[in-house]
Amino acid sequence: MIGTIAGRLGQLLLVIVGVSIIVFLLMHVLPGDVAQMLLGDHATPQSLARLRAQLGIDRPVWVQYARFAAQALHGDFGISLQTNHPAFDDVLIAFPVTLQLTLASLSIATLIGVPLGVIAALRPNSWLDNTVLTGSLLGVSMPIFWLGLMLLLLFGGILGWLPIGGQMPPELSPPRITGMSVLDALFTGQPDMIFEAIRHLLLPACTLATVPLALITRITRSEMLAVLTQDHVRTAWAKGLPARRVIRRHVLRNALIPVVTVIGLQLGLLLSGAVLTETIFSLPGLGRLMVDSILSRDYPVVQAGALFIAVVFVLVNLVVDLSYSFLDPRIRRA
Amino acid sequence: MSASVARRPITESPAWEAWNTLTRRGTVRVGAFLVLLFIALTVLAPLVSPYDPTDQDLSSALSPPSFDHLFGADQYGRDVFSRVLFGTRDALLAIVVADGLALGLGGVMGLVAGFVGGAIDAAIMRFVDILLAFPYLLLALIIVAALGPSLTNALIAIGIVYTPQYARMMRGQVLAVRSADYVRAARALGSGRTRLMLRHVLPNCFTPVLVLATLQAGSVVVETAGLAFLGLGAQPPAADWGAMLADGHDYFLSAWWIATFPGLAIFVVVLGFNLIGDALRDYADPRRRQ
Image: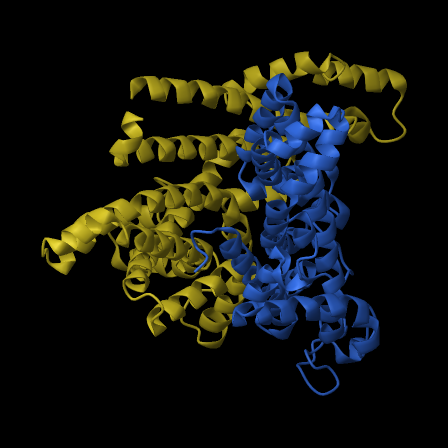
């Protein structure tokens, strides 16, 4: 087991170096001559040369990369052109918002999706099964930025039950401890604060949960169906075990292993997929920060954000992979 | 015997059987209808649209759906129905260019990696691994960041993002086909590497790759529209579904129709492709063919 983890960590390092090279090339080399951009068309050759030397972009590309990588390792991506804060600080401030949104939607998707998939698989081809299948097909086909707007229109606009954006009403805001509004509200212990935080999170979390919910339902159903036909399940039935026990211990336990993988992989994807949801619900998350920085050509923040999300994504995938072998003894021994 | 194989009636060919099995499913018929309607509209848009999609008529700005404007009018008085119809073109463009680019790039990478093997295989597949280490949307975002926001660049970005899946699938197919008897026979007969690769290996690897292309078509439409929605794809005043949704976002409480109809159009097109794609995948997977 330790050997496997060490091997995977080695691969992980290579992938992260590769990712950083791609981010570096996209952000430093492709956009063209930064000095020209900063100084404009009327700059003299001397001032251009001076600025290039100052920025270090007159050096060979690999030297520039080495410098970029060394600074990145210290969390130094330069200063944000918009906020004048260190770029990485802006990323760290925005991250908890996205993390909270992602975790909330993944919980919703799992808590609803797994039982739905199980129920559908236990009655294949029934009206229930067909409804679940149709629902999940509609779910994966839904552009979530449209669904978000429609939910907002219905619950925020027409019915007026839920707020139309933001994390908290302006007059209420809990002191920042974790950066996650619900947790911070919990720390204050004030019921109205907690209630508001959850109310604001509800619509965005449900919107973002749509696609993972559909996927989790589908995979749970198909894995259940596959396990139900296996010999050990027939044996369990033949032994006269009660249905609950057969389903729980013999079917569900085996069927859920691939489901765990799908859930884990979704976590990584949602971290970046949250950008559309954050835009609709005006949440100051990492995705929104990235898009705003791209639109205003704030490259230090774009780099910091891109590298940060990619590294988190790779790490999450590693944990998922390892948990797979932890959950399934057949893989551990192989 | 060879004569009887050659003269087998068309109704016994695998393609015929596939067609028959697939079109027996009601969902496939619905999907095919939606996709055909979508493609027809890209051509017929100028004939069936009541207005020019970019014509502004400020006197009817933000007017709700009516007989004059079936889907209402946007903030500049442009007819939303006509814009939705013309929006089919950007969506089809996304499928042809972005999905096509991914298929082309990924296909060539997978073909070369699988066929040549060795260090080249390792180099290509490590590159693919690194691309896969980015979450989809993030990679698309930073490619657009580097190239600048526009429809063309959004399509390039989405194309690159989808490349790894095609590369992996193609490589797997090539590895399976490469050592087949007929390929070895062709090699023994003196076929050169290029001829072997293009004439004998490639044509037999295509089917699963095309199934993947159908499955991806819907996602490509959604992601291209998503980039436009964020302001990183098609730019105003283009009649693009994603850009229209972005317009509608600013007015959604006062003029719900601006965002509702283009979003519905995306949903319907994606649903059409998913209905066909799911059936194709089930058909291609013998374990699920029941």
